Length: 328
Image 1 (cartoon, helix red, strand yellow):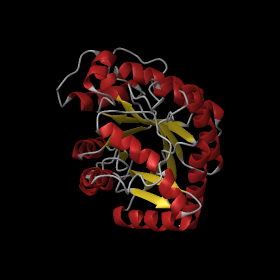
Image 2: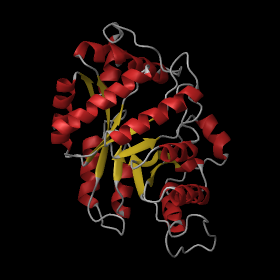
Image 3: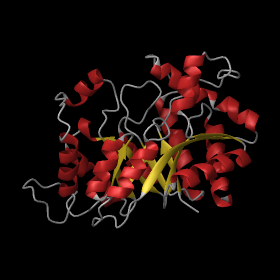
């Protein structure tokens, strides 16, 4: 029985606000803790009307303080937006507050448009080697004996577990070279998933953190008591994704029955492609889809995301998915 974890973007539904999103986040995290989910990760995004997790480190501390045993981390911190020293200090602080429960996933995308990225750090670089250098520098800050003269306090010696996130072969190669666990964003960018997994596993080099390859895959689940209800609930995420790809990001819309069926061929093809790693339906349907996905990929862990407009339906989806895991 492989572990299931939670990826939360702290969605802001239409008609709501960030404060309510954070209350929903804590409620879901506390339930996920009781339902034996392995990790609860929050993702860094900026300038998105429907995503409230921009101050990711702050929210990680809030969730960790409101839960008991579940591991809490970033899925991920977009390192090009930050100084490695600042992230080492932030996650060193979190690890000091919640020892053994904090982890750090790192991505190389800005998590925003170029204008927002420039406002975040103001020194955008096209140097492809900068992200790997920043990852190594960050890990060194948190090591027992940093090579750098500048110290991360807190941070030094705390060795927060680091993951590499990716949606292409670049992240797979870097994770393998550094001997780090790898999380692939198959929940929205599955095109290179199979090839990336193969590259990571075949080129992996053991490290002090990890002896053998470990792959966690993003997976969308929209679970409900019936296939019909789940199909309607999934339309919120479908609308949001089409709006985003059309250049008009919005807060998470309410469900719209018949939305998918009434889409044009281009929009429907786009959704079928980017959301191919998705299970929509009753527990029996979701179990069948997830079992087939695990069999096909050999995933070591699934990172479940469920973007639903209504918090109670979203929480119910994670509850049903926890039951699916127990039945696998």
